[in-house]
Length: 386
Image (cartoon, rainbow, N blue to C red):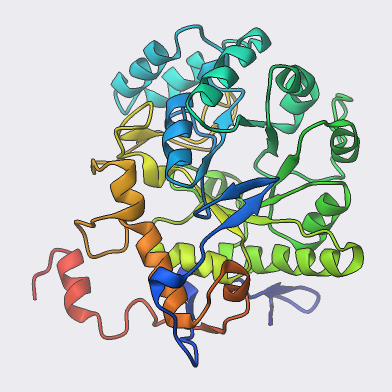
């Protein structure tokens, strides 16, 4: 659907998580019988939840913890763990900074160069914790450090930036060829981020073994406010899922789609998967877990940019274990805990026994979905009483 802006231009309708709802199935399934497993880059996940490559969220020990619970974590290979011999002290300094100084402290800390000689140590720590070594590099970082990371024992490479396209232009001459990288890589390569059919299809055609969806939806990310760029996640996910379907029909190769960012509740995760994602990637939701390297704090990967920070340090007041966050028992009624239980219930109500089946359920455009009949809940949330 398009809306006219002028005689020569129009704007397409794009939908976010709270603009749609899922239609219950003609038959239902016991939530305990729902299969939440998926496969990403040859790795089998019991639950379709991936922790994003944020220094305040993912450490080697956290990667081991979430893996033991069935998920996966991605470490930022251009973060504090590969810039400093003592990353814990650096993380403590970030957490201790006042709100008015946090961005400046982050900018100063991330001016320290990446040290490829630290890759082997941190990747070994991840594996010793019981998890596969999955790490994220920007496209420029992949060009500079990709080979060193693979030689150091990386199992899966995630090439990730605010927007990653196959056709990037730069006068500096330092342009990463996704096709060359995937062709010459000895390990699987996931690529992100994107929001359109065309870019996703080109990434798949270039050899990506997974595509990440999302520009600017994260809680700590201010890309949308700073640049005005982005597409709401339901539409973005559906766009990329359509590219996956067409690419699979053409080649027989199935490329997983990972919706990255913007989800805090089980219902939002469910809608992302129903829109076509095979798994979801989140970061801020873990910030209140003591297993994270900077409990209560997190910040986006684009925060430290010295010229144009596109993120902010965010504090989360809750304090629950990673296991409780994922599996309960829940202490709230908002769907922000027991995420796996929320997802199982959603799929059971819709009659989807697997994530692939969930891709086919009906969705409706429903602007009143989150407000219809919720007068008392909304009043309580706003502190207005009954």
